[in-house]
Image (cartoon, rainbow, N blue to C red; front, side, top):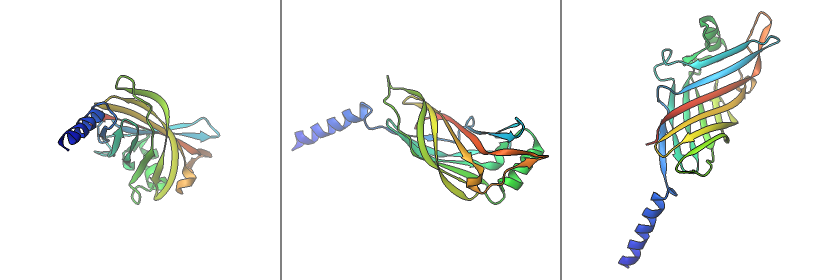
Amino acid sequence: MKPRYSILAVSALAVFHNGLVMAATLDLSHPSNKVEFLAVGKPSALKIRGETKNDKVKQPLTGILNVTNTDITGTATYALDALDTGIELRNSHMKEKYLETAKHPTATLKITELKLPAAKDGKVVQENIPFTGSLTLHGVEKSIKGTVNVDKTAEKADLQFAWELQTADYAIDVPSYLGIKVTDAVKVTTKVTGPLK
């Protein structure tokens, strides 16, 4: 019996070292991580861009992604008061009137399915990999689909998630000012990087 157990142990170690069983986590609180959005006005070509700023909220992005050699899952939480459009009055309107951050201070993105392609020389570098998940915003949770650009090694991961949300799905009023309204579709990008532990 002893030789049999030894063979099983050696086989298990071989599988692990060949990368068939490997799991790590990516801490999303890295200071360079951020969320960006783009909203377009109508009828004008007004473009409103915003992003999370560390000087607005000390820790704007938190959470953990679970990373294996085949997939990525996990949860990211965004502090909405960290969003900055570059104009303070517009920031106030966005947070107080539309996002109502006093009632709903965060948004939560859950990644439920993201299949990685096979690694080449220990790396995965590919754009537009599809993912599915859910977004909780303004007290409403909705399923979402998007894409992610991946640059991953065994030690580090750089990920850029992109998707589009409809403000009406989250019971958010359409912002308007002097006859100019913002379209219902908002493009969101989340950029995360850090060591895999």
